[in-house]
Image 1 (cartoon, rainbow, N blue to C red):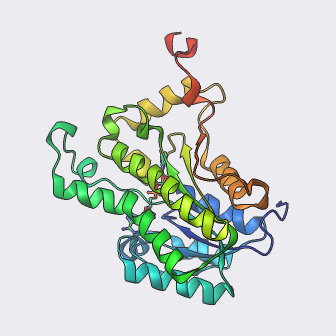
Image 2: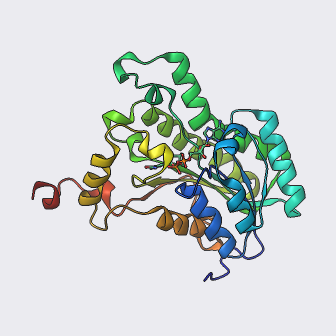
Image 3: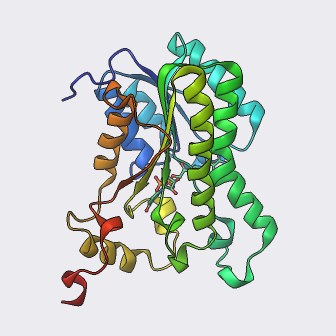
Length: 266
Ligand code: NAI
């Protein structure tokens, strides 16, 4: 049961691949809270994924777009404004992929062409989304833009490899574009730094299961689930967080403030 926190709001949700995707839960929660949305993913992902099911369930149209392609992003936001009947109140960037991790390249032996691709998909796509929204003036005043990040942007998690730098870049784009959007039309831009979560992207990282358990023990509240992450995104899209911008917000059950936990030593 929703509380109408997003009643009358229009949004675009990227990155829902299957039921495990964080974006899938966010889409469900946004609609439950009264929003109308469009869904988007890369054309290739639409072939493998189950997005039609989510679209049916949420009454949303799917607009394919490769998030590295500016023309496709321009079309995505223009169509979304048209379909939803006005400028957007919120946008979720939930996109990540590392070519070097996928191809099991060691961090000390990275392929730089693949690294460029990783940055383009995982971080520069966020700037591209915002630049497209900016140029089309597609965001409503007091709107909210959120991207999902991970604490490897601040601390070293060796197996996360070049995704660490991707997330550092992503968080920096949020601060920099947050300035421009804030001063022009009071739009806020934040990143949510989420606990390890069992999804297609998450499980691609080497040793994910061991690490998931470690983080769960280290966090006083345990790992934050994707459902809890969806709740937090709803809050950030709602009018209850109008003055929060240019922040990287930890949503991790307390993990980021821990030094050592007896639960690990035990
Ligand atoms: P997921 O695999 O379900 O979602 C990743 C999405 O990125 C997929 O839907 C995929 O199709 C999309 N994508 C990849 N390349 C694309 C492109 N060129 N254009 C458009 N979309 C593209 O996995 P998850 O975990 O839900 O990932 C969502 C976000 O959450 C990512 O940014 C990820 O780094 C972040 N995150 C995930 C954590 C985890 O442990 N799963 C922890 C912290 C952050």
